[in-house]
Length: 122
Image (tube, rainbow, N blue to C red; front, side):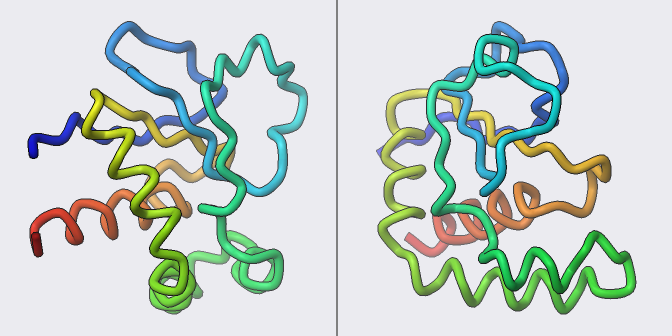
């Protein structure tokens, strides 16, 4: 079955017409942002790294590769989360929202990679 586009976007950016379903994939609510401003359709805390992993990583670029490996391992233990996002994609585009400052090294980027790779295996 065809899947919709999967995008990654910082939650502080304005919602766009091509965003589709907007899913926040952080465990903590973004600072200084109201629920209306965020314009999220779903807050999927379960898709975020565990609190222990998040604290360990601390957005330290030297830990990025190990963070990715550890986060992928956590996601592998949560197939229901991955299946939920894939199910949403079957309905149309999905934008994974994150609050981190680093747009290249954050959990949403890793989550998108995992979901895209999973789709290629099917």
